[in-house]
Image (cartoon, rainbow, N blue to C red):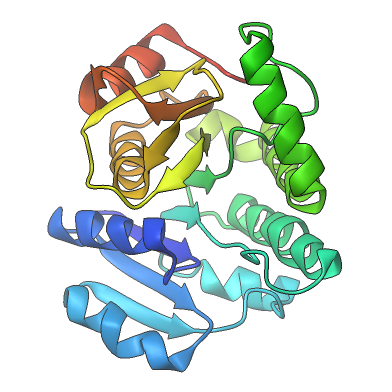
Length: 250
């Protein structure tokens, strides 16, 4: 059973993922910044292992060490709007790139799941209408540093994965880009793949999709998928997107 390194372990999506993954028998190394959250993480399951460490202050060497004994990596970290735009870049872009590179270097790591955002793109998607475009522009006007940092990290994951020597040995990169996040109860139904931009998605549904993608795998190809709540059951949506090679990368 693969062990997972979960970066940003005290985030709401990450907490849902920890519950789901440990319930399925996975050991989760949950990286958190605040030691006061150790007991909360540990109380989820004996398989949840809290690791107090600053992602922002990580070095290449410490990122490499964090990959020891893990097979899958999940990036669900972020500055969360705390601090100036420089901190957003330091966490959402620079630190993300550091851990992506470490995962690619690590011989034992085979999958990397990036929890990104549907507005993390450079231009209008071909399947959008005017409302999608307005939503996209509003996000970039409101939080430009965040959007730019997420774009850069996502593109780095794609580019470095395509160049990685171990790409032909089972390496899989997964970029999941949800719309506006809500704390409503999970619906179990989504619009996944080339999804429309307006509309939200529950954090628990994001976590469920992430776990399904990790466990299902992508057949060694990697996927970029947008996500909002919709009408298709999660398991069917994941199977459809992977089997048909659906991609929201444009």
